[in-house]
Image (tube, rainbow, N blue to C red; front, side, top):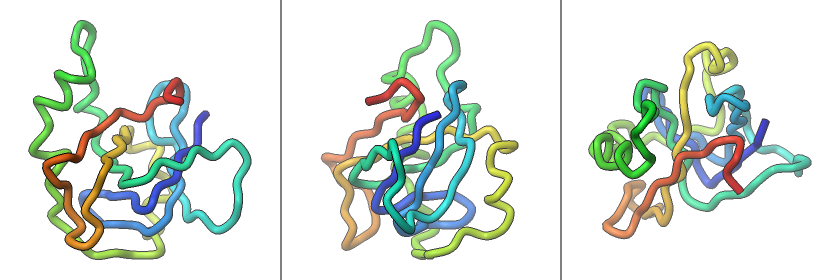
Length: 129
């Protein structure tokens, strides 16, 4: 299990969550999501935004991360909800059952809360970093 934290986590149906931790299990799925309130052992700080997406965007055998980025670029870099929240709703407590994956988007335009022409993405997995 790996823990990543960022300036913001983005959940498409919810919007931005300020300073959240995203735990990734050994299968590469999001196992937990919670607010960063204190220093946590083995936490990896990643500047930018951690964007959660349904697992159906994961590459199938033979595909690579670049193919996923190309195929899902519109979804990865589009933010329908721009609200910034400090607390996730209760239904996020069982996020592991939703089978989501997480991408790191960096650099990010925090003044407009959107990706810019320099923003790149990276799939966060238990083997990253």
